[in-house]
Image (cartoon, rainbow, N blue to C red; front, top):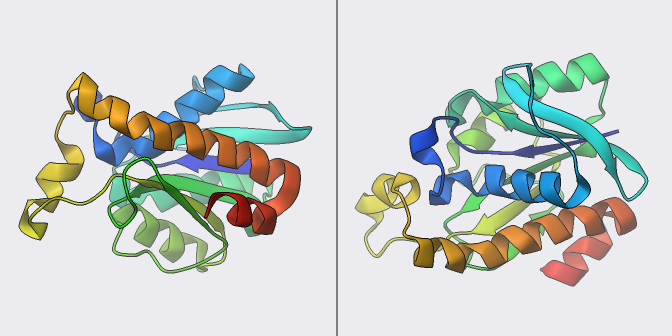
Length: 185
């Protein structure tokens, strides 16, 4: 069983923001594979189903971003999911809009959700798919950049990354992380 986690903020005002790309990839996977992500528990909305002959849990933590690790550890422990079968999808300012980056392990890169997950799992060794959102012109505008509502046109620019992120999850489950990194990085 794989745990596929998309990071975002749960409040409605954060939908259609750059910081919710992880949620948007989970929504895309939910639609493609008809996995309803409506069950509430483990401080998350989640659903179970199958992708490429693998049982999966699609998860959107309902904590604030900087507490995402709390939800993930609860699900991991309850379902006894090994860390190597956790895939975290999240927004990345250091990746170009419409691009994705896949890594087997690594630091948080300054992302508060990833800091929480690394701290709670006590390891950096889990797969992550970073969805490119680009960066603001001035770094001091970073918070406003990631949480401000997007126009439909700006959101459409990000959708290519969302679709690629969902494609990468499928590829990862089918062919493993190394092949997926070769294909998408």
